[in-house]
Image 1 (tube, rainbow, N blue to C red):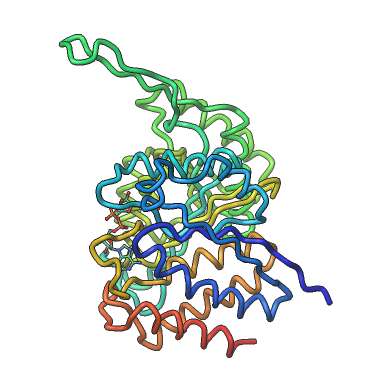
Image 2: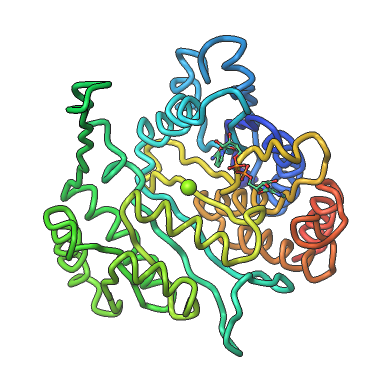
Length: 356
Ligand code: NAI
Ligand code: MG
């Protein structure tokens, strides 16, 4: 028996996070069974709700508890009344940094039967991946504020770009491009940000020399954002710094029709630490508790986990099942349908178990 046991820390979080997580675990169990993967779930109720009870988003030894798991599945955190920086800096960012999840990976793919808000030229396919540097760059704690409340008040926030940090993001993106259509777009702004961005460009092109089969092209971030809208079919892999990547990935999620579908992986590619898989969407307090949240973003995120676990076939089956469920017309309200969270998840489960 080659069945491999995988321990997964499960953090459903708040709002619809809890609603989309549960059916996703059932789908993973069904796919896992067919591919020699046995899951042990390690449930954590860490959330904004937990914060209002305890004053912290997770217990003091939270990161140690997570370190014992192989991977982390996250729903979404956020609740009205708890400031967003609390949930971000109290849970998500510590996890991304402690576990060196230096890649944030977001597939941008227009699924069958879904309308993009863009008017696409005949024959345009949207199928690319954004690789966002996830540990450094513009999201740094270096800086400060002085002369608060006076006319002399000022704020300084430094960006931090290290050769090691840029290089590992670039190499990850180049590897990915080499395994796909061989094209890499690098987001820059070297005309306005005159120290860090030329450095970024230099390191990316240094690395690219080892990948003669990949064509690398630099785009200024403003022009790149416009091209996401005007010509999304041209992209294969896009690599970007933390801030640029953050903005591009939300734009990417928007052009594929619904934020409810888009997945995201926070990867420690070496596997020295757990990676974290989550949907792009938040806790959606406006629809929480109604059972109408789209579970496909969470399910697609689970598929990214299967891929990272070294089971690309299992991962592909989940994506095919998502596509099949969409084609069959079972859709939640955000996609113009009437189905509930459970009905959509059940449809995916049916397709997953009928494959192979
Ligand atoms: P959101 O993604 O929660 O919701 C934006 C809009 O999209 C809402 O109208 C919502 O109903 C809809 N929506 C989102 N996911 C959906 C799904 N699966 N199915 C159907 N409709 C869906 O973003 P918002 O409203 O800005 O933030 C709400 C809370 O979530 C905030 O507290 C925010 O901080 C948090 N948040 C957490 C994230 C995370 O845990 N990684 C990411 C983004 C936001
Ligand atoms: Mg964002």
